[in-house]
Length: 168
Image (cartoon, rainbow, N blue to C red; front, side):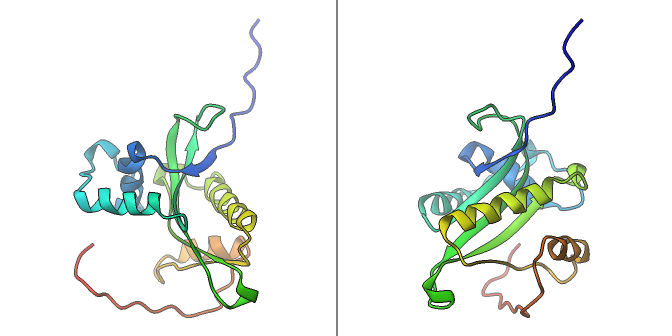
């Protein structure tokens, strides 16, 4: 008689590696379908952007990985986000965390991974000493807005953007 399998290990949130860049770009490519990372063209612009994020202590491209070993290696990327830590004079001079590019793989939504991703990112910001976490979300993403509200975020500000160049 074999022992019943234990619960699956919790997903791990950690900085993305260069090898995971295609998986991150696949998550960002299409919110509604699963994109095979092998089909993603990693351009020089993406390489440069990833290298800049990786080299900047105020920026992190974080991945949520299932099936990683006990050191956080290996596994499947099922979510991602970018966190930027911004110094400021408000909030007593404390940093704030700006979270963007939040994605959970389309076929894995609804099972708590998004909540785990955001809670881990918020805990990371709190550990760093951030006074608040802020994010922006496209006005058309109503499901995402309900999700963020359920996590305790409030729609306290109106956001504006000015495109400085054409492109994706």
